Image 1 (cartoon, rainbow, N blue to C red):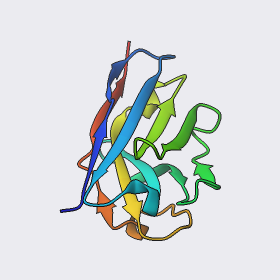
Image 2 (image 1 turned 180 degrees about the vertical axis):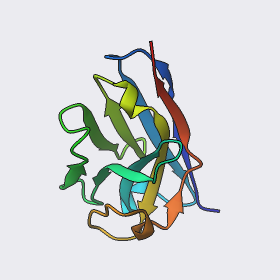
Image 3 (image 1 turned 90 degrees about the horizontal axis):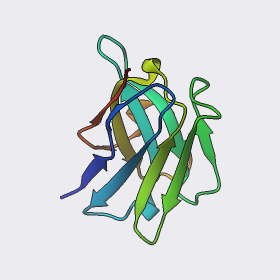
Image 4 (image 1 turned 60 degrees about the horizontal axis):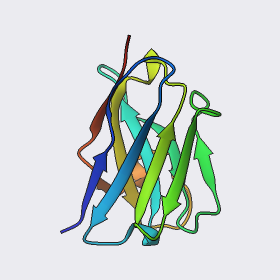
Length: 124
């Protein structure tokens, strides 16, 4: 059974950092392009960042550029989203997603596999 599991979310003060990890079972993340999405209450799901299967390309939403970094750890078979300088507007449920193509994908419909999501709350 293919499953993605996110970890590392929680409550953090503005300006703080969190490190989200995405783990897979049923397949290896190394064979997939990976995306991180988020969804705030009443809003559509939006791409935060994505990384190609080969780890040669990555992209970021304008709202997180310079603050978030996506990376792969092929030894641990995880994909990490390092989030720094967090702001209240970053509060949302964050989802890891995987697609069976090598290239980047920025739309939710491009992804076949999804985690259940993890809450990130930025508040003082």
